[in-house]
Amino acid sequence: MNSKSLVQPLFEGPIDIVGDVHGEIDALHSLLRHLGYDSDGSHPDDRRLVFVGDLTDRGPDSPAVVARVQSLIESGRAQCVLGNHEFNILVGHKKAENKWFWGDDFLDKDGSVVPQVLADDSTRQRVRTFFQTLPIALARDELRVVHACWDDGAIGVAKDATDVISLFKHHAAVIDRKLAVSDLDDIDRGLIYQNRNPVQLLLSGPEERTDEPVKAGGKMRNERRVHWWNNFGNAFCVFGHYAIPNGKSRDNGWAFCLDYGVGHRWTERREGKTTGFSWRLAAMRFPERMVVFDDGREQRCTMAKILTGDDLPAIKEAIATFQNGLDAYF
Image 1 (cartoon, helix red, strand yellow):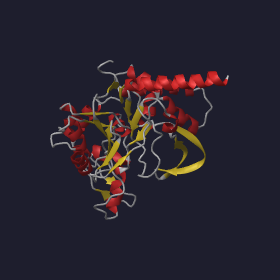
Image 2 (tube, helix red, strand yellow):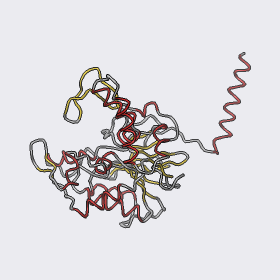
Image 3 (cartoon, helix red, strand yellow):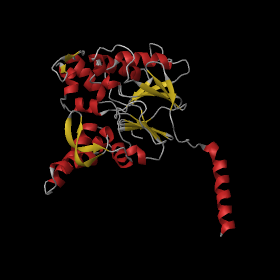
């Protein structure tokens, strides 16, 4: 695999995959302690960390989170894939949630300032340079990690690319040319930009048109997210992005969403809560398939059995038994 490819090899051995952090530095420190990591990121069992992206925005200290993850990566103790929030910063898409990067306050819906550490010029340069080094996906034989959606076609395109901004702009231009002679309405045009640009698809997932407008993100939309993982069945895939509350369906046995919505924790602090948050940061221990939360609680995730070479004799025996049964019947 190209050493500069946007799809890179995933660490071998036992790992801990961390969901979307969204600037919640205290939750990250707490989670790493519960996972058994020392202050320098070392682990007594030689485990390593993998982050699913969306390190920044919403929470109180995005610069600290980025610095912590960058340090872990530079020491060889972590990997991280690009999330849509990092990508927005890379391409200069100013959003309400990433105002910290531009040195501006993030305002609540009532106009109140949400406390955040703001970036200065040197921080902006460091963060942007670091984000440019992140791959879009990580893979090993039995496991995949991506921010929002694993799509084999889009992954194949990303494997041959080395620069995510160039890849995004190239496909946006291709879509521009095709739509120049199209009579599609704005909704369907938007869906084409979302679903046919490999960068958009991998970083923020597929969408579809709704029959009636729906409220999402505080505004009415004619599109909704597609739960692509319900039809996924390949190597096991861990992803984030979707901020699914604990207790809601987040997997199909082959793919598992690790975003437990810690990016919404600022709304709980706004209401005066300082402990016992309902939105949490989580990591999956792999191959143990145990989810660990920043408050120390644990729960086992459902997951399809990953087949290895040791399973081949049993598989062959089952196939032979099935074939014998067919022969006897017919």
